[in-house]
Image (tube, rainbow, N blue to C red; front, side):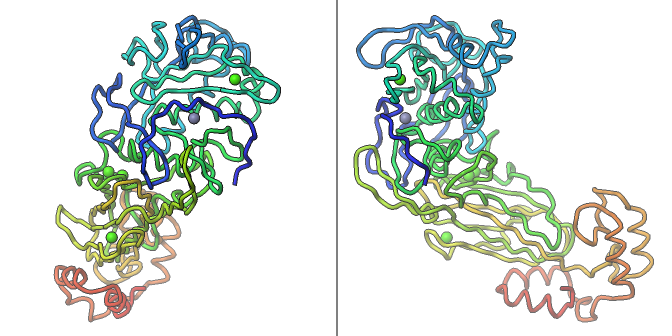
Length: 483
Ligand SMILES: [Ca+2]
Ligand SMILES: [Ca+2]
Ligand SMILES: [Ca+2]
Ligand SMILES: [Ca+2]
Ligand SMILES: [Zn+2]
C-alpha cells in the first residue's frame, strides 16, 4: 500500500463520472474527434493523440468563475529545470523528456499513441480542437493559481475530460514542481495523473491498491498502476490494438517461431498489483467485440499446449463519493480460446466461466504456421496471460527427417552451421545452428524411429490428435519414445 500524502486534493473535481460501474476504474467517454484520427471508431479501439505546449501568453480561462490567466508554463519550466540553449524548439529543453515520458508511458500500456505537436497557435486553452500543424489535442498550460500555503499545495493541476483534454499546472507550486528528484517525480506523477483525466479516466480511491487516479498525490509507485491500465485498455485497448489491431486472422500479432521445449508467455505483467515503469506486458479482451489473434510457427512435429488464464489482483475501490466494494480483476469476463491453422479451427475451449482458465492441446505432425484466437464475453477489461508450450515430437537428432540419425544429419548440421533461418538442425531449439546442435546429434547417433511410428500417415495422426484429450496425447508421445 503506498503511503498517502496528507495534503488537499490534487485536482478540482471536474469529471462527470458514469454511475454504477463495478469494474473499478471510473471512466468518462473517450475521445471522439482527434487531430490525427478524425472520428474514432467504437469504444475499446486504439487512438492517436497529439500533445503539445500552449504558447506562453495563451489565454487560460478559469475553470471556475474567476480571473482569466495567461500561460507562463514554458518560462516556469525553464526556471525550474533550466532552458538549455533556449529557442522556439522545445524538444531540446532539459525538461522536455519529463513531459514526453509521461505521455509515452500511457502509450506503453494501452492502445494509445502520443505524438508531440511542436506547433501551437496560442489559441485559448481548452477551447480549440487539435489540428495537425496548428495545435495539439492535449495542450499543457500553466499559470499562477492558488499557490502553496504552508505545506499544502492546494490545487496542483487540473485537466478536462475528452474532447477538451487540455491540462493546467499551478506554476505557483514552485517547490513541488521544481523538485528534480527521481527524474522530476512530482512533475511526472502529476502529469501522468492529469493525462489519465485527459484520456477519459476519473477519480477513485482504494485502501489496499496503488492507483494513479486517486485524487491525492501518491508516492511509492511510478506511473499508471494496474487499475489505471485496465481503465486505459477499456477505452483504447491493449498495445496490440494499435495500427489496425489484431481482430482478424489476417492481422494477427506475429509471435515468431516457438522452439521445441520452450514456452512462450504473453501478458504476465497483468497479475501485478504494483506496476513498475519497466513493465509493459499487459493484454486484455476489453469488450465482446474484441478478438485477439496471435500467429506463431512450429519448426517441426510438436505437441502444443495453450493455456489462457484471466488474471489480475483483488482489491477494493470506491468512487470519490461512495462506499468501498471489492474488485476481482481476474473474474471480469468469460474468455475462450481457439487454435487455428490455414483458416480452419483445430481445437477450441470455452468450458470455463468467468474467471476460469481455458486450455487446449494439439499434436502437429509437421512444421507449420498456426494462429491462436482469444475472445471473451465481457463488458469490461479482462486482462489475461497466454502461454503456448511446445514439445518437439520429432526424432532427436534427425535433421533430414528420414527417421534415422546418421552421417546424413551431420551434413545438414555442418551445411547450416551458424544459420538462424535454416533451422532443420536446431536440435536444442535455440533458433540458431551451433555446436550444441552437434552434441544433440552426436548423443542420438544411431537411433531410429520406433517401427510403430513410421506407418502412421501424418493426416491420420492429426485427426486423431484433434479428437482425443490431453492424457491420450501424452500416451501417444510416450509410445513414440521421443520425450
Ligand atoms: Ca496550488
Ligand atoms: Ca485486446
Ligand atoms: Ca484485438
Ligand atoms: Ca470460458
Ligand atoms: Zn485528478
